[in-house]
Amino acid sequence: MFENSFSNDAAKDVWEKDRRHFLHPFTEFSSFRDQGALIIQQGSGCTITDANGQEYLDAIGGLWCTNIGLGNEEMVQAIADQARRLAYSSTFTDMSNQPAAILSKKLAELAPADLNRVHFATGGSTAVDSAYRMVQFYQSCQGRPQKIHMIARKQSYHGSTYASMSLGFKKFDRESHFAFITDTIHHLSAPDLYRAPDNMEEDQFCDFLVAEFEDKIEEIGANRIGGFFAEPVMGAGGVLVPPRNYLARMHEICRKHDILYVSDEVVTAFGRLGHWFASEEVFGIVPDIICSAKGLSSGYLPISAVIYSDRVHEVISRGDTGRAYPSGFTYSGHPVCCAAALKNIEIMEKTDLLRHARNVGKYFGDRLAELGNLPLVGDVRGMGLMRCVENVRDKQTKEMFPAELNIGKRISNAAEELGLLVRPVGHLNIMSPPLTISEAEIDLVVDRLGVAIRKVHEQLAADGLIN
Ligand SMILES: Cc1ncc(COP(=O)(O)O)c(C=O)c1O
Image (cartoon, rainbow, N blue to C red):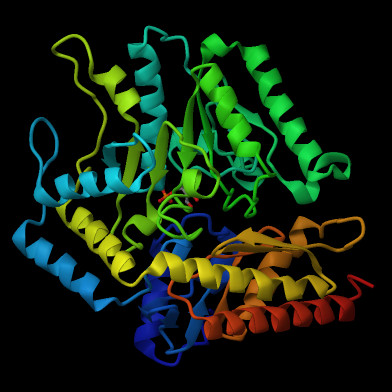
């Protein structure tokens, strides 16, 4: 928003406070100095309203998280009731609370196979960080303290703490002024089929990726590798759906070398791919550890759960008296957050939201594919309610626009003017709407995005930036 674009003084005042005092995550300094932030005032279902009263269809779903939609009264009531009953109580050293205990059991029921144990954290990053620590703890308890190396993939995003950011490897994040853990974290190629080397076919590309993993294990030594971290469908890295059988083959290799398989389902769990969890139900693998967050409470309150197997638990808890698990947070198992997660799951169950997500997810994919005919669109991909459009300068060669052209942002700005929010990530536009989205709303998303892409194309042509 610009300084002179406000319909009232109160809205401008809030915008100014934000602009002067709030350091936003991942926000470009120069454009923020000029334009500040879009201040959102309220939301209902898939629609959010800014401080000027302008409505937007939120195809980003907050940040992959508003699964049951905004403004759900039943949820609001459950949160208020729990806050009144017990707003906080610690879960450290022999204390617990009702919602945390009941939620643990519920998650054990929903999670695959023997993933019956839950360690709570506060968000996706702290869940991944906690899983990282759990891998080291487990390997050390097994008598293999040297298994501290971790394998992850390029283009992945696992969060913003020191360890989770080091596991991730997005180009933009790496080019920052931060330091990373580089001695014990290693990265394999991203399963990016659209940009597979030498235009490899799917199965050939899968063989290539699996061989790369085996080579990496050989190079480091299986006796030094503790864990493998992977999102089932890579989200912020560009909604990369892995090649057929890729995850199953990676999982098999992990098992062979007692490398714990950590499935980062921060985005994919709780319905985004139409199931409670994607690892087993979509990809047929049972990980050792699943990290979940976001959709667990549909973004109403911050909570995450590291769900892990009895097999891992047996190892970390056996042995000497006096051993504890020295990891966790003041807000681990927060009663109000756990009550929100329980209500969220209840709402999803009684509205049969997973089935709805499967249906509209498919519809979304079919409709979005139509945009593949547009001149700027190199690839349209995704699964369920995780979708992405990759914009290119040349569809034949897949040549990208220069980064400074900010193609994704140009398109998201044009969409915003049409009342649609899509997420710009470099040259991509990513979408992950609430699971409650209707087919009619999906039509609006696709139609508006199509208009936005055409407009930007015309503008680029008028400026002589493309033919
Ligand atoms: C796959 C994945 N893991 C972890 C995170 C980090 O979650 P949070 O921002 O809640 O810490 C994200 C956030 O988008 C994510 O997409």
